[in-house]
Length: 480
Image 1 (cartoon, rainbow, N blue to C red):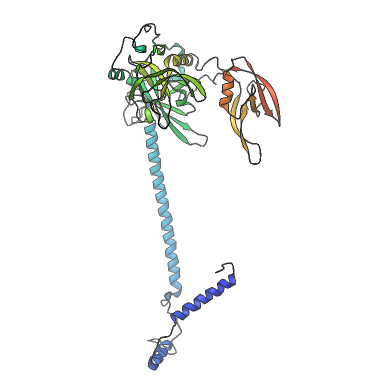
Image 2: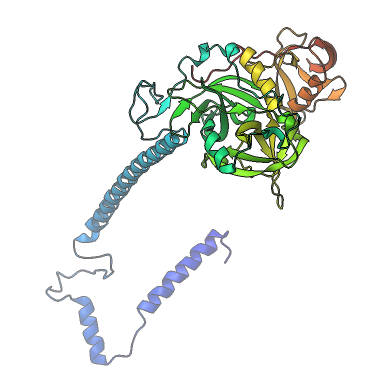
């Protein structure tokens, strides 16, 4: 049937109705008397006279005086049912919203280390309203961490003077069993949890590990554990949680220094001498794999001493170990059998069929970064373009979009806000900040670089003198 022909449709509908009436009124065989009786029945209804009787439809929609009222009541019932359904849906939505908020709040507290334990007396607790001494929380705030004299902090480190002829590598003559080492250093390794709030208000959670390196609450971890986050919390093995202050970061060395205000005596890791490590030397790794298994101990050996590995576009010389390393171990400790910290775990090679390829930053390398961060809050002598540059999407054609480097803040350079950086020293940037960093790293503070830019519809070249990279305010404070 062609549904586009309304006339044909109407005729077919009429035919259908006619056919239905023919089916309902199909005559049956009857005697002459029956026919007469049937005729009388059609003309007269029991209980009525011939004058009183009127033609009536005996359809299912008719029942006496309900011809007009029945549909109204039916519609009325439908309206009330709909109202009741809408009300029920509203109540269910409110109930589900309440349950969702409760569950989200519960797990957010668990993730940040808010447990239902009572903390030691005298602490300041971190809550949503920043209330003090809330007995249901154990998270202390940063206290006076921002005012701490970091430059005066002295770290306990082995200088390697007694390890020249050691047959035990970096462990020297003080060799313990795995059980003894784990018992001695496990409380120096902490769990780190972070939250990151995006520009759209979306909150993402992260986790890692850290090692206490000073009794005043100084902790070393990886830069990539806390890079770009909004809040940092440190959880000790006794369950107490502290909001951490970020002293400074070394992006290229993947090192960050945190500070908490301890309300208890801390177990401090002694820094070893990684220069004396021996191939095959036994080590143990302690960290927080998967962000849930804090205090996990794995053992292995030193598989390679100076392995060049590219991490986040930076080539680093790392220690390789076959001790099990997993996500969340980053920032944790790699210890020798003397119970000394000889590496800060920061990477693993993960691929199908690959096992036992974990890496750590040698403590001799990490100690240099830690010292600079304690002294200055940043790494001095690092060259910088002196301008704030961002990767942006630019429409270069009707159907094409290209990533370019946009100058957001020119600082004191000859660049201008709104410039697009096309190349530096002849190297095309292709909208990649990591390429810009790699070119800048090859220079020193005070060197000049040639920058090709796009400004006001035309390309031009300017010369920029590199300056020392100094973070704004030298430090970043998330809680002070």
